Image (cartoon, rainbow, N blue to C red; front, side, top):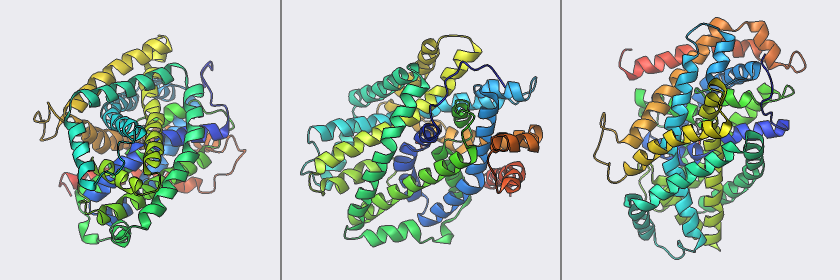
Length: 449
Ligand code: PHE
């Protein structure tokens, strides 16, 4: 539909891996376990998986359509598909949300760098569970090191984004994904052999339906959108780089499965350890950082495993932050005709300011709260629980109002070259089921139904 001097992913597998690289990150390994822990365990998991299938997957496919059809940025895509309308607000919401997410995400990504360097010098060797907790508390309440790591992470992401999508994203994802899988499987075997592993598994897989409340449903929906990277045009931006041979339905299905599998593996690693080491499942954001080192240092050559794990986690976070920074960068670049470097600099500077405020909200700014939330918590809440699901809702409404079924079929089947077996079901879900359910979840949360 538009010019193409833009980058195109080199191969089909590159496109899938890069999208999976965006989806798989701290959301799966850090946010999923602690959110599940705070929201009652298996009942949350059940609703989470339903949200992934019923809401996340249709929105992901819609974003693929929007990006692939237009080969344009988050706002440009809507301007091309629905000229002179307000639908490009979906894109603006997305651009702002990617900056907000990167702001708080960079803090946790910074923590992974701290843990990575600490294991590199053998720092976790012979430490007791109590010592590991103290180490975390000392680190997160100090000012300088967390700030340094947050900044380093944003800077590295900026450098990669400037060097271009193809070279940066595709390569990193190709090497990283398979490695991450191997180490996660190894760690789950280790975790399952712990003394109280079965208690952890029951917590993760045996639902207690009385735990399901309106808030649990909203949290599960938010986590599903966050983990799949959907609702904020991040995947639409990525899909604008897919070549014409890319099989969109297959990619969406594969990315969704990989993403869910990684989250499940993270749960299988964390909860047996949580119950074996007597840690509360409701510990919150630090949960993973105090449990994982305990699992790893029990292995022979524990420090080396910790080193590999935190390196991979940092890289998984990096492939997600690259996709986050890509959205505002390509928007500024295309809409304001700047160089890629300038665009990425402007976006990174804004994100850096947010990152600094989020980092300090664990110490000096801890008492400064809005709606009873610290700055870090506020950005997490505003994005995962509002901007992503609302973005998803409006994407569905846009598909309902503006996209012709036959055109959608043509893009989804590569102009008739592939078969989309459940096409009508997909259209029904995008046009009706997903938007109605998202509205119901919001009404329910605000006590209106
Ligand atoms: N899905 C990423 C993760 O789970 C986070 C992310 C959200 C990335 C939204 C891009 C857009 O870590």
